[in-house]
Length: 97
Image 1 (cartoon, rainbow, N blue to C red):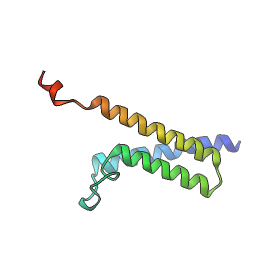
Image 2: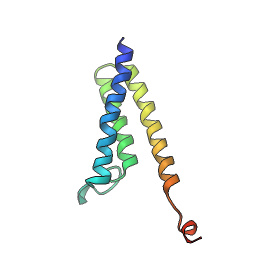
Image 3: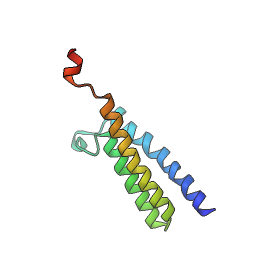
Image 4: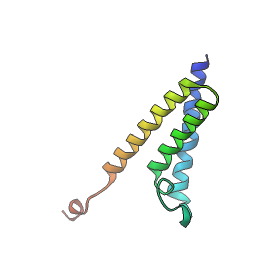
């Protein structure tokens, strides 16, 4: 039962951090003194926030399934956002043709 609770908690944390990172980087924009990575990059802020949240909560409360599953999910999220950004980026050479 505890392992099921940990995996549900993984998605609860994910569903809080991902929209918050989107809001802070794409809608609100950070102030000038925080206008550097990872604070102004959605991919960076999402990945690092997820990683630190999963590690911090997992280690603090001795939830090792949460910690391991969350770190894997954070890594996969970073990879997915990188691929998405790469696919949506248009090169100038391609735009001129």
